[in-house]
Length: 172
Ligand SMILES: [Zn+2]
Image 1 (cartoon, rainbow, N blue to C red):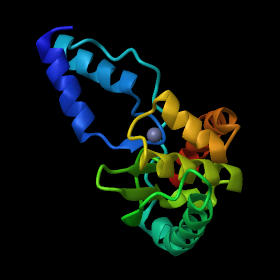
Image 2 (image 1 turned 135 degrees about the horizontal axis):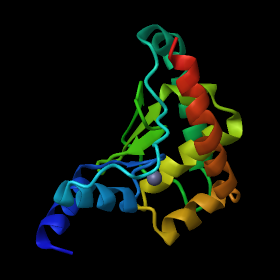
Image 3 (image 1 turned 60 degrees about the horizontal axis):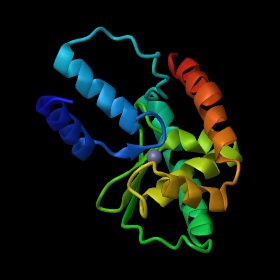
Image 4 (image 1 turned 120 degrees about the vertical axis):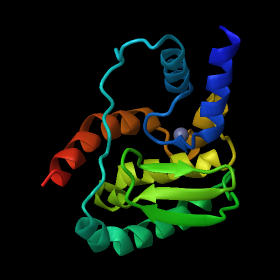
């Protein structure tokens, strides 16, 4: 790996929030490589959540906050969790279900309110666990598994079904 790639990689890493959906280390590295070599886009199509209309966001934001805050209280009470949370924001995000900043702020897509409960739980747990493990390491997933033992299946369901459905709904 050349120094330039490494440098871009580190910049990306610093800028990125660790989100629920797509920004894995491999993605960051792939982007850095593309910048360096100007290679064509060959990676699989990203399934973005897509941003909702302003009206749809307004209509669901409050409900989303209530659900998220209740879920955070409930799930953060579990043994080994009880993380310190600075602020919770509900956003109309384009391509993420949630994210966690290095400062300890949690952001959630308002559309978590429209997910089935088991997937909403997964998103909340995923971001909660980033308060301890700011990465997607083995330790991170072990922490997730305390609350969501079947996190693999839920993650797969979230990615394969709901991202696409929400995009379809929101195009109107
Ligand atoms: Zn994550």
